[in-house]
Length: 140
Image (cartoon, rainbow, N blue to C red):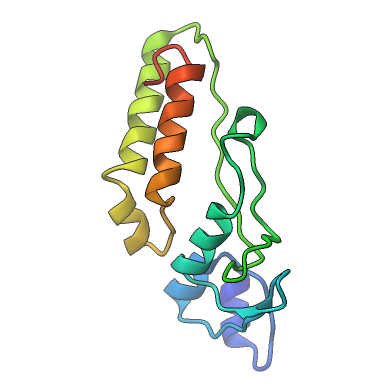
């Protein structure tokens, strides 16, 4: 993939997911954010980006977190979204999906960190769970 070629080809530049940078031990540069600061990709700078937006006010909890105005935020950050039925046709399937996402947000965060992914800050985890409880049948 891209990270293999960037590592192999002298003086090459590429853009890959941060997890690949960590796992492939690639060199990386700082990126200037909206506040004018040059920021390294890190758990703290990704979480700063996530925390700089008003998730609770967003329609269906949908927020794009790149180009954050926060001073310590890495400007190229992304979130993962799941699309779920508010009233599922097969409640057992929905319950299984929510069980997985609860695991991912609670116990699974240590595995995510070990793999180079950044868990949501605890305040956002609680907002997600509150959103599920009020929005989805069986989402609590």
